[in-house]
Length: 118
Image (cartoon, rainbow, N blue to C red; front, top):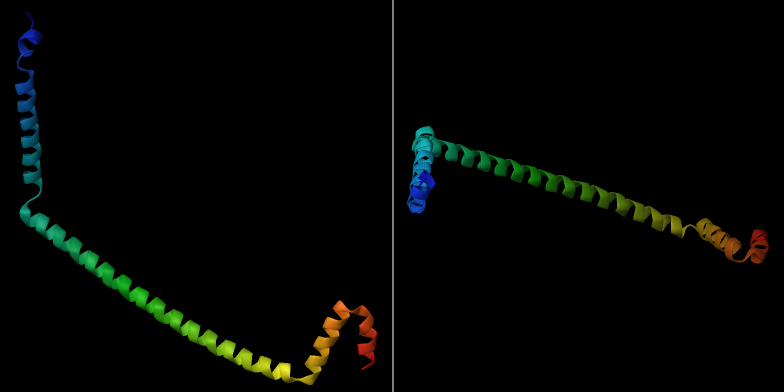
């Protein structure tokens, strides 16, 4: 009869006791290294950092939105000016003749000679 035969009937209680000792050592180590005041200070510091980041991000997003609105209004002004100029150009009779000549020469080459006479 060896030591293994003697422990055969006691392995469940021995493993349970070893587990309790391991948990107690880990709990004691945590209590020894992190005090409640340190933990509270650390979590307060993290919460402050997160709040500051949220405020910074919110301000950056608002600034980007304002920049985009400004760019959009500038683009709208440019497009309105281009539309105004386009209406003036389309009203010009020379442009109408040029368009007719371009489309006629591409689609109907035989009619191109007639339009050149005009």
